[in-house]
Amino acid sequence: MELGRCIGEGQFGDVHQGVYVSPDNSSMSVAIKTCKNCTSDSVREKFLQEALTMRQFDHPHIVKLIGVITENPVWIIMELCTLGELRSFLQVRKYSLDLASLILFAYQLSTALAYLESKRFVHRDIAARNVLVSSTDCVKLGDFGLSRYMEDSSYYKGVCMWEILMYGVKPFQGVKNNDVIGRIENGERLAMPHNCPPTLYSLMTKCWAYDPSKRPRFTELKAQLCTILEEEKAQQEERIRMEMRRQVTVSWDSGGSDEAPPKPSRPGYPSPRSSEGFYPSPQHAGQHNHYQVTGYPGPHSMSPMPSGFQPQASVLDSHDSWNHHRPQDVPMWSPSVEDGGPMDLRGMGQGLPPHLMEERLMLQQQQMEEDQRWLEQEERFLKPESRNSRGSIDREDGNLQGPTGNQHIYQPVGKPEHVAPPKKPPRPGAPSHLGSLASLNPVDSYNEGVKIQPQEISPPPTANLDRSNDKVYENVTGLVKAVIEMSSKIQPAPPEEYVPMVKEVGLALRTLLATVDETIPILPASTHREIEMAQKLLNSDLAELINKMKLAQQYVMTSLQQDYKKQMLTAAHALAVDAKNLLDVIDQARLKMINQPRPH
Image (cartoon, rainbow, N blue to C red):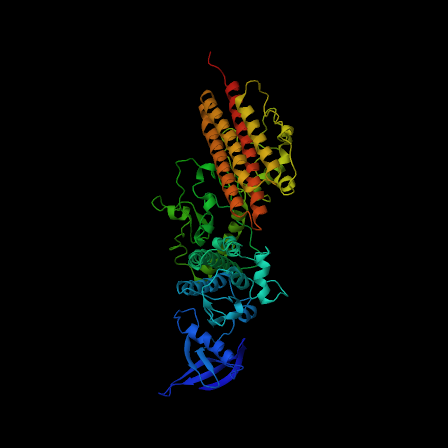
């Protein structure tokens, strides 16, 4: 046995790096723990007790015992973890470790502690300084000097997870190790680390419960950490794919000049962005019925096309022009391209000299980047579930208007520098806004917890119609009042009172939708589709409100409580605004029915 340099210090002895030479002359690097005061029998007994404990364990994330030298000097020989203590490792590699690696370390420790739990042992000093790093993706639990047969449950599992997520920062700076547990027992809680998943922090807080019976067992921690780890790995893979896609786009664009040439008008030709593997976001999936691209005056000057018209392919001919006389049997825009699949560019530019082909490819890349920027700007106005975007559009227009005539609920908006977005047609008697409904602004009122008096809401009529016995108008007003009442009570209310308040809003919405169902049969058939879409949007708003309420209840004891409460109020605000839009749609249908010429 060869004793090397000192690599650590412990309570009873120092740890050295050494080399063990076996009888067959094979050598192995080991860690050697030496006893500081071997002359005392009591110290020697306590020192060897750690080796006796380690001998019972065999787990991939627990430091293995190799042997013991009982004669003076007393040594304990263990496997060597070359990367040292976890706390130092985290501090040194703080900027190179990602969140998935940190959660992996916590999960590996939970497997080791669950194994100890099955053996009826408990490690009474779980901390990052007592965890060793075997490799960049493997940690092992060590220092069993305080381990003993399980006698009680006065240990806290969440502190070490917090240390790992904080890259080795010591909890409660300036407090002795033995006093950390006392601080937690007194009700103090460590703040949620930066970028820590809410589910993981919630798990930590459960580990810090004062009542031992309410703390999760290590087997439960192991299962939950495994789920959190898989979720983080999936999100990390998605972020990597997005980054690679962005880098590919940038690398294509860097091959050309810094400023793209003016984009030519290409009637009827789809965006070249399809060829780079663009896939629509989940919010846009299945939303083709909400807006029409045909007839839209976008930057490509696309002319309106009949519904039965199938666009034909345009391929560069030898004169560098878009060929609109392509044979009918060659489709230009295949379904795979329309669905976001890759575009087949084989055959384009065949027979051209290499330098001309390269010039055209560079031009297409520049045009592709222009199209991408235009589409990204357009998408911000196309997302049906983006409440903030819709709210900003409504405020800029100065009124809260619903769809009219043959318009759809969401209209694409192009680049302002090319073509201004189409103006909404005015409606007879329409006011500039919905009375005092603007007081529901989530930024101005919800965030500050300002109480709003329900009696102040008085939505004015949106058309010169007789409102006497107008059930739709009365129920819209009732729904808005229910939303305002909820907004005035939600800030100080405990989580158990969220459900009754949301239930009142839901009952008001159900009454409104039932009244609309009774009204639809007397309205023109051409308006039914638009009214039904407005009803579906209200149902979606209520589902969003319920979802935010559940999140606010789930994270009531965390720092995310206020954020989810604000999101809950924002969803309620969107519900009230869309109820006003439904009233506008019905009013327009009534006006259309009144103005229809009656048969003689």
